[in-house]
Length: 173
Image (tube, rainbow, N blue to C red; front, side):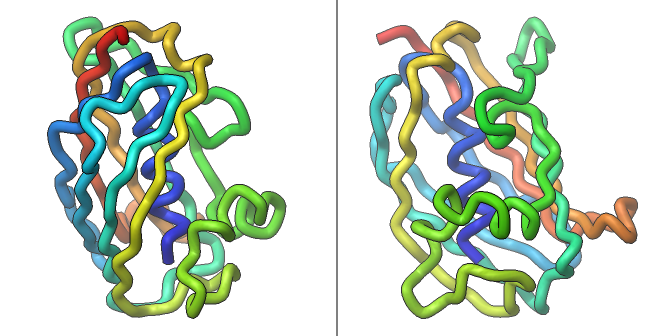
């Protein structure tokens, strides 16, 4: 279950030296809801920050679960491209495929009692989160960013299973 928020946390970090998270909103969906908080404000890049996330899946998620991530700088409308290992910036991720092919990225974030496998099962979990931010994201500069994370089944992309909007401010250290 933490996989979605692992991706959420990594993507939120894709930009500059300091990250100030100003909001996380649930923007709808038929299966997934949640909330979160970042305790480290701002987060220095490179560096790390701490937070907590709560995720609720009202039913098991499909094995063809997709995550559409879009990160846009307010004012300029510039979209942050997909970067690094394909999980940072504006990327499309096959969530179960990523768990299978890159367990070293995802599995450490799963609670001990939750198997690191698909399908992601119905339930609720809260967990601490550490955001590790690499130096390469400094290139996008200071400003306010919006990140939209939309979850859907590849078999039915028109139906949003879960959606989160994050607004954050980046500033030079």
